[in-house]
Amino acid sequence: NWDYGNSGQGFAGVMNDLQRARSLNPALGVVIVNGYTDLVTPYLASRYLVNQMPSLADAKPIRLDVVEGGHMMYLRPDGRRALKEAASELYQATQ
Image (cartoon, rainbow, N blue to C red; front, side, top):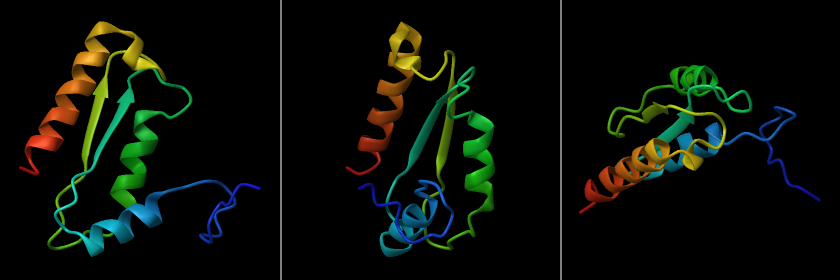
């Protein structure tokens, strides 16, 4: 029994939850990484959804990265490096 939440979208989505978390913790860093040729979660869909979110005055902006590769971009050495770099920068920003 999967709980899809109460957004009424009819599909799994996290944008409402993400926006709520950012409103409760404006220092929360968010990085979304997509593969350029990903047909499962296309990077333009991520960009569209982030652009639809109302801006929060004090919240950090959401970082959107696009790397070479598809849905499993981490199978490529350059994809792994990009993910490591994004995670490291996110972590360093909290120190």
